[in-house]
Amino acid sequence: MKTKRLLPLILTMLGLTMVMLPTAETCSCEMVHPQTAFCNSDYVIVAQVLRKTASKYPHTDAYKIAIKKEYKMTDEARKLLSDGKLYTSSFDASCGIKLEPSKLYAIAADTEHVGLCDYIEPYAELSLVEKRGLAGVYRKGCKCRISFQQGKRQGNCNWLPFSQKGECERSYGSCVPVGVVKPDGVPIKCHWRRSPRFGQCMAKHGGK
Image (tube, rainbow, N blue to C red; front, top):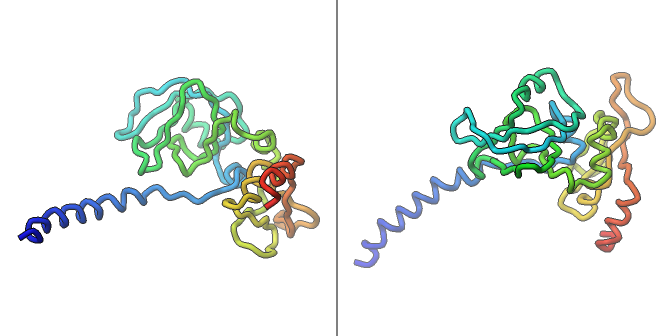
């Protein structure tokens, strides 16, 4: 009797689990280096969030912004940002984000719709290397690739983002071309250019 009474409850819980699982998995983003975000995005800006405002899209939050610095901007991106608004999903499971009024953010994205998979970082929390990278240094390395694949590959800088070295390279490194380039401008060799702060970062964690 107890089993029969529990069966509907068990089936209900399983049903809810099956419904919830896809939602929880909808927001999945690949970790990227700030340089990759810069190079692959249609616009890179520093913007101040003025206020949360009315959204013209359902289930979407809107933020009024003021662009303080513009490092990269395609014509199409300029049109999309012409009303000075960014939109994001109202739901965390759909990669929605929350922005704080009055705060400055470094943003690298493709459209006015942004989320967790875009590069959006509080500007005050960036290292000096990251700030200089967004301002122009990263642009010099856009012909290089930063990838998780280990081993020597042409035009590639190896990166393990979840290692301590990878974290230090994110904040204090950029991938730049060295030596000869191919006729199409693609470099044969790229390497990490690391600031003195990179060494300090590694030493802080035992050099591992």
